Length: 123
Image (cartoon, rainbow, N blue to C red):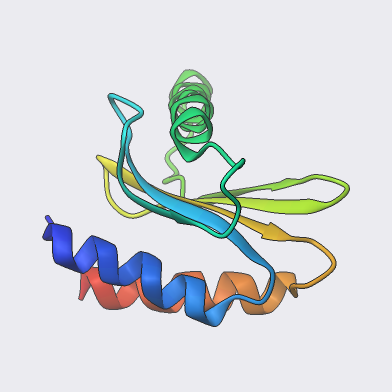
């Protein structure tokens, strides 16, 4: 498992690489609590977003199990009219929640940056 410093650095690195970065958190899947977070908008409540998004991840994992799929959930993209929200599993206990301005970012670059930084953390 990653250290707190490594998780903090992951958020900082992703924030620095993503145009239109709004906020991100590393979330404990079971509790829904963010272990670390950063936002460019004081009105963007990452604690609330983390809690609700943990339920989305847990429900998707249950769906995969209920369908008898032999597959591993890697990430989920939620596309809003003004924002992109990416939920990227780090391991069985943690996921990254990221929100970015849809007009200011490029989905391919966003995913590439997230995948690169999460892979480095898990290396």
